[in-house]
Length: 460
Image: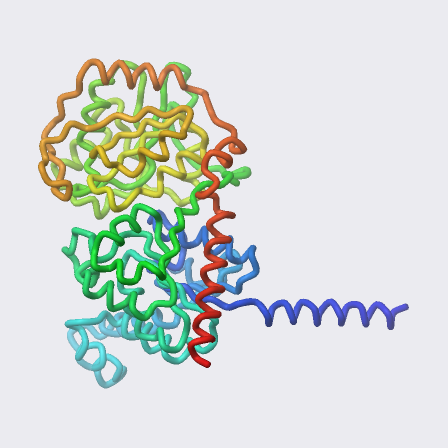
């Protein structure tokens, strides 16, 4: 009996080993090694988890932002720290040496390499390039995500060694803001050069429409149009967190939540703030949950609107992704603020839709890509800003907006009437099937397999 049991155990072990060895191994280049408050990283890690379920062996190469993130595995995803750690080692050495920082060139000769290339590449970029050249043979495919854009450039350099797939969450060459070093990479010329060597390119429809009206359309045959994988059932379980005295249980208060980021360029909140001030005294309160850094606002503006000086505008700061999902389920309503460009859609709108809660959608332009999604949503209200900007890429005016009494009454009625309502997820799933994580995961699976097969064929 023991002999038979031992054989069964050995057979099960062999089966598990065979499955592990036959799993397709993919590596993903992504800015962050964890799903933090950044929308793009959350999308990528949500996708990673679905690819694991499908049967892939998934690794992510990126940057750990905190000491607690220095782990080898996260939810079954392998995390690659080596390039970041090597670059960090030299940086820390320079700090320790103080005024003798020049000694780092002797102690760590690779510092010379960094110095020679510092006008073009960061140490992390150089280390990642070196790592990829040594290790790409260990993987079946590479997926490079943007933005930021440097993962596309890195992946293009090894496209002759491994099938490369670009996941363009944002526009590349057509993105208007070229103000920082990474964004400067995102030219039409670079995009075409990178795409020429890619096996496949994945992007949502709003990015695809722009892509096909520009010279980049030369690589349109490689594109798979895939929506954001944001429609999913919230699995918050018994998640607990400190929310303080937010008044969420106050029957006389309607709690609206904005969960995400504002920007002084494409997503300026002035109209929203003016609307909330006009709703003062109605019991309707806006809770802002998200980071205040990188917003581009001056100190005076932050002092006015992000320090809780206005009675019904409450700023709470950033929270981890799990807490953000939990807050969506506690809201009486959600506020979505569209962009002033129609080539990029905030993925947050699909988070909101997944919750089934009432959504107040504020559009800055008549071609806002959220409109087609909100047309299907049963408890939504869309209103348009009246802006005096003539160019859609301009910074929205910081001057106070004129909010009509009609709009104020319309928003007030919508918020109060729909408090407590929620659409069941089963209905949401049927309304937005192309945005479910399962559907998008299958599209990625098909695209990855096609890229691998084509690469093998071309190598023969």
